Image (cartoon, rainbow, N blue to C red):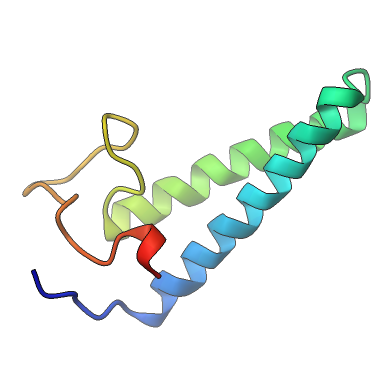
Length: 88
């Protein structure tokens, strides 16, 4: 299967998703040891909401980020389209 060239904003959007994922991982680790920190919890929830919105925009334009029912696919089946998110 031939890999298609993605537009530049594909890579920008994917990098933004990776950045927010990093923030969410760090906040998760912090909240594991500081569960009563309301400010951190608010920040976590805001970032989680932002990430869901960003992922929805990305998937609407470029197809699923995940497989096995964790992301929807348009028609035809989009999971076979490359590059996959971990390939860039």
